[in-house]
Image 1 (cartoon, rainbow, N blue to C red):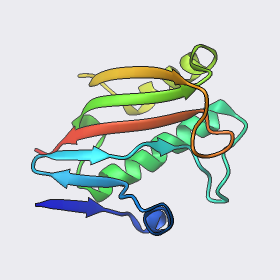
Image 2: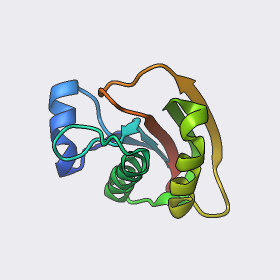
Image 3: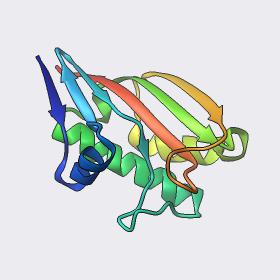
Amino acid sequence: MVERIVPDSMKAYYNDFHFAPAVIDGDHVRCSGVIGVEADGKCSDDPNVQITTAFETLGEVLAAAGVSFADITEMTTFHVGLQEHLGAFMAVKDKYMKEPYPAWTAIGITELAFPGGLVEIRVTARKS
């Protein structure tokens, strides 16, 4: 049985865009991609703020599923301007992701679903 995870702050995404921020599938929590969208529905022009917002939102989804950053086994990130913003991404990521690190693939792309979005983070975590 698959359980849908929809934190209260993300119910509009579920209703408007028809996707669950995460699902629990057996021992795995599979999170949809998270973009650093502020409460006003916009992405900050500051890459550090935007990346931090994405990780904070991801942390909220993980907590609602009963896991944490330490439980992440795989991460895929999608970057507009990968080479330009990779250093900033890694600096913020390292505040949230500690050893032992998960598998990670970073992919450069041309755009994201939200105007001005620079990064989208998708993870899989394992429930203990």
